[in-house]
Length: 513
Image (cartoon, rainbow, N blue to C red; front, side, top):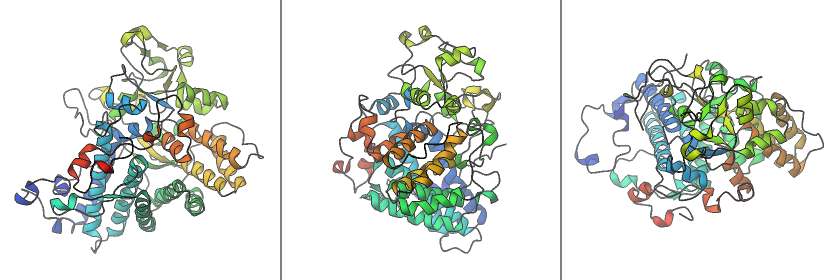
């Protein structure tokens, strides 16, 4: 069974987001004073659960999922859909064209990350001096979530406003941009505190809550992203040497419903199939508890894709694999991991399925390059017969996996000239994929290129690829001919933020937008 996420009481957000005359003129009705709310242990728990709830909303929001938006600029996936105009804001991100500060998906993830940060700030500010027995753990969870959100934001947007307090007047909403270095420093400070007070994964049992291990892993990742590889290694090695974490022996199990919150999962967003959503009660743009994005990303129906024979249901055809990804699996001789990630048209037909382009819009399957995705796909067993099946997927998003920690460690060791240790971590990934150990003579930049390729295959369709290419200086080469330019290294700051934030002007917009 899954842990049902709770929706935090709306009172906690009164005055945190809305900047208007009602903020100071009209007192809120039927709410509890914040000065007394956080005196109760159960209220603190509700507020912390509310932070997780906002994370669930951001990564699973229909049409605007942070999970999908992050992976679109990469070279492992195409936007897909019915045609070039299907969810235009997503097509634009995928094709690097007409990406503007009014892009609704980019604006949504910005807003929801900052809403998550705002609630984290509210918890931190109101319990930091309390004597509650749950204070240390609650503070640690809130600080981890604030660190996670800021890392996502600075990765995608660069220099950003660093909000660390709860605004009390309309004027407090105005805040200028901090440099990425300043944002990283705050992330490191928050993670340092979180690591001290978060429990080990082994003591959490079946739980969506964050652990010491994921805080250490995120610290290592943040340091690697800053090229502080020597500093990163102890944090990554601490996760690797902890028996609470390991790879799933079978790569097919990594994303299965049976292995939710399993030993490979460090941070996972849970969804349920029990909310009974149908076409009448689905909350478009709202919170549904089910993972509607799985339906969005499933193989196209309408007679285009026949996937019944392979145990899938039809979806709406977005997030289609690229030929480049399929070719990379084949070039590596990577059969096992490829099967867990993609299925070619020939393989689909051989297994009793089929593809009929004549049923597609204009007789052409948009953004289709000969394969469907098997990772995060529409598995019949992961939805419910209650309500409409398409609207009730329980598939969890694994946002941070132990496999990525091994790859980050391999990169850090390699950059520090410790290639034998880099090969050791890389070989753990390859062994699970059914591949031979890397050539023991491989070292230096040649080994680094092997790590880059291994990460391409292991983390395909998980939203990491593009941002790695940018930080490695490889985007221009790997994305040549796609429409990519250096301005696409960052998303534009939403125009809504520039319009409403008195400390920002159009001059603060990211270059090229």
